[in-house]
Length: 281
Ligand SMILES: Nc1ncnc2c1ncn2[C@@H]1O[C@H](COP(=O)(O)OP(=O)(O)OP(=O)(O)O)[C@@H](O)[C@H]1O
Ligand SMILES: [Mg+2]
Image 1: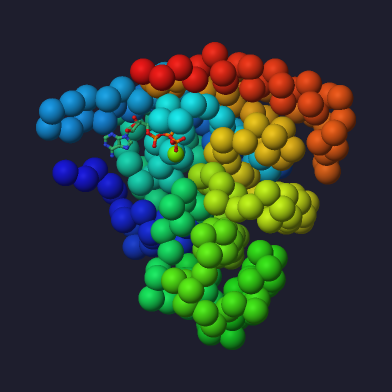
Image 2 (image 1 turned 90 degrees about the vertical axis):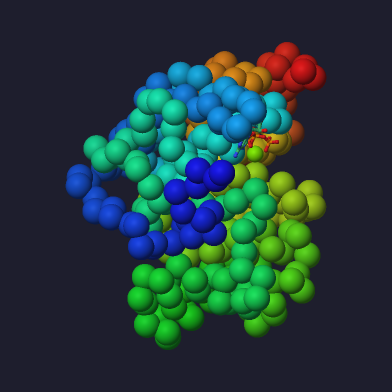
């Protein structure tokens, strides 16, 4: 039995259950998301899997925070709870002073498996959230166009999604999550399917977008290099059940030089921490 609150594909858009009304103005740099003693156990007919234990974290408005940890430790689970797609077993998530109890247009999500509409064109996928929000056609088209340009897909706007490569699909998913301009963007390995060159371009593109907005980004990645390149803070998780092993604050300006001694030293240290967690069960 599924415990999904809403089908995953609706996150990142205004949905029927969306009751989000900002109740306070949070300024850049102030705490925006409060995760308190979050735990999650998946219960199926014949098993119980404890995935997350006592996870607490405050996330600031405008911050880019990455979460790294061994495969299967519970990263996607954390993001799905933040998106309001699955309920925690205990603990809570506050966005501002409101408890997160379901999906909302204040949060956009880029899923690990894209979750696009295969029968819609690229443009129509990107426009989806705006359509649901009732934006007039012309305005919708203009906004979608802008984000298609950002992800370099303006020439493919009228293609069907099934005609695209994996990396291109992922870029459509990113444009779709960003186009509604949500306060918080949840990204589950958004660049994981991209080749190294496109990945670097997308990372630089993401930083450019962030320069112009005060969106908060919670970003999961397997790439420590990507985490050090992008993050204000990196949360390192232990193996399952995931708990926080360390939070690394990076105060360096961006763009960062991957070849610099401090970059390579930090990357090495985090990789070593992760290796200690990467034991096969
Ligand atoms: N719906 C579910 N029902 C039961 N168990 C689940 C469910 N979803 C995930 N799990 C289990 O919870 C654990 C954590 O899964 P999750 O997808 O959060 O890991 P992850 O850190 O994102 O992994 P990866 O890095 O491979 O994407 C895994 O052991 C997985 O099998
Ligand atoms: Mg995952």
